[in-house]
Image (cartoon, one colour):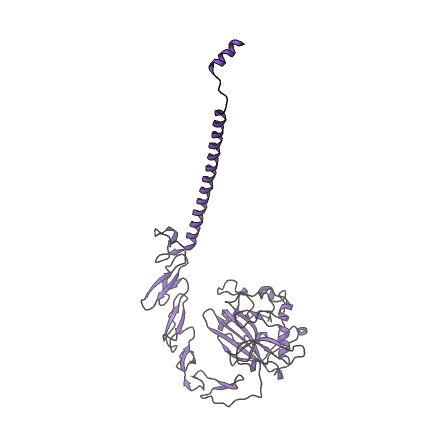
Length: 427
């Protein structure tokens, strides 16, 4: 087996030793949580990261890879040439590819396809795969539409609309993971999305493309009950049961309590249901009651369902128009059956209608304000001191000059009136 993500127990970046002459060692990111683990991460997108530009990258960027593999939220593309070298020797094309995502409501979406490998650059990295396997909340044949399609650059085919490089098919795209992060349907072709049931667009806040080899020689004893199917997990030499809709549990031993198409899952030895959009309750028996575009979400810890309302409404069923002004957020208290407004920092009041600067309450004096006031006072005192010193110096000089004149006058010889008169007559 040429890649060792199967043989590590922890997720994140690992140095692996592929059996490839041109690659002695290679750093890859392993995913050990999705459907049994052992996956190598080809693409990672995360709305919490500093967004990496995927759309304006060149063919060579996608060939060699870009981004940062740090085991966290950083976004990256492993590189087509590396994926080609890692998958071209899968026995009997026995590789697996998986595309997964989490939408802005926290709902998981994913689909896999078998017999995956990536062609060479001379084949324009053609995407080879076979039948799709399990799917969760996505359109049928999501991956199959791109089977045997070569990659194209941003100037050809559907890339004129969606940009980036991609395996375009006749109707353009069934999922797009190279756009920008957004939870608005405006200019959706620029964002990250999958096609859901009935080809509804599902915007994603996180997305990954994964691949791994499958070893047909490994089998497992089948302890699965009630029609469950065994799936081998290479990590730890374990297995898990894929249960029919009627049962759930480690060995499919628990009858599903879910109604109306709900999916039963077991968490910490407790079963609960993931309901379809039309129903929402512990057993998916209660019809979806949220109004005005609200989304029903079942709270496991409270054993009840609640409506997650859009910005325009609030209330138990999103039935009340949002009375919060100035972009305030309406917060509904189910226990008290009332709402309050969380205001923008500039506004206040029950409905966020008051501007803080217009209120009569005294302003809050901060340390920054105090420091500024002290600096101004010191500056003013310094100016006053300089002026006082200048006046003192000038006054002292004037007094000194006056004293000197007085002293010179006092030292002149005295001239009597008699001498003055005799001088006149002598002339």
